[in-house]
Each structure stands twice: as C-alpha cells, then as structure tokens.
Image (cartoon, rainbow over all chains, first blue to last red; front, top):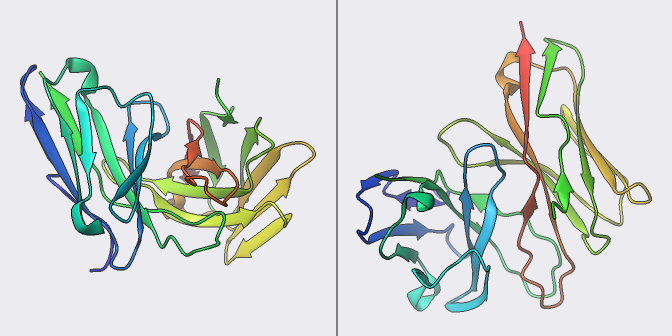
Length: 117
Length: 115
C-alpha cells in the first residue's frame, strides 16, 4: 500500500497528558501537511513541511503543539498538556511538491481521532 | 471569515439521477479547486480538481464546473449511485510560486443517494 498512513488511528487520553501522532506520507512526496477536523466542520490547516523544513504554521497551532519531519520522511505531531478542546480528528496529507507547480492534489491519510477526557 | 462556503448541509437524490453540489468562494487569489469525498471515521478521498484557467473538468461520472466571475464551482455526479452517499468537501488553494498550497475547506455537504 503506497497511500498515506497514520498511527495510531484512535487515542483516548486524560486532560493534561501529552500525545504524539505519526504520519508516513506517500513515498517521494516532498510536501506534508497536518489538518484538524472537528464535528460539522471541514478540515482546518495546521502546518506544512517542504522536505524537512516547516514553512508555515497556522495560528491554530498553539505553543502546546509541535510538529517535526526529521530527514524529510515521516512526520510527528505532538500535543502537550492536552485540553478537552483538542479533541478532534487529526489528518495528515502529502503532495509531490514538484518545482514550479501551483496547485497540487493532496492525498490524505485515514486520520487519528483524539478524545481528551 | 469563511473563504469557502458550502451552503447546503445536505442533499438527497434518487439513484440514477444527477447530483449537483455547490461551492462558493470569496478569495480571488484561489487558483486551484478540489472536491473530496469523506466517509465517517476515514480521511478525505480525492475526487476531482480544476485549475482556474479552465471552466470544466470531467472524470467519468464526475464533472466540476468553475465560474470565476461568480466565484462559484459545482460538482455534478451522473448517474448517482448509492455508494456515492458521503460527505463532499470543496477545497481551494492559492497561487504557487512560494505559497504553501494549503487547502481551505468548506463545511461539507452530506449527499444521500436513495435506491
């Protein structure tokens, strides 16, 4: 399977705990994105990587959130001191990132559903 | 400020008929538009896209129409099948040349295709 994979698929945690999610993009895709989706809303952009460089972060990404993409391959999203408002589906997407292109199709993983009690 | 709007939260269509899902946007800098289909507890699945230099793109049963002057796009599915029942999201991204190509999504339309 060469699609985007995410782990874990589900995570239940208590308020105040730290959680980490992993995303493995499609092989050879240079661009990687994190989104968050809450009930009744469309996905909202969180952050973006071009290879290993984090080039943009949304204001939704508070200081408790950190994302990395070491070596430009897989990415992790960590949430520290979780709050009940962090409960959402966290989606990862990747795209080829070909030089000179404008719009590109992003391919999404299955998501990680987080529930903070 | 919702830059991408899907004003119909739900749509019900008979099997075999045409489904038309609509999307409006406000940012004239958007130059690439996509439609995704989403089942519960799964990630969005890409359906079809269109660049702002075109006004129509077709792929099998799916056709997307873009009206730049009205800042409106629509997705036509014909003939509709029960397996098409899902939430459909419209998304848009801005110009390239250094932009992030992040997607801005609408709130989705739940399509129910009745057998």
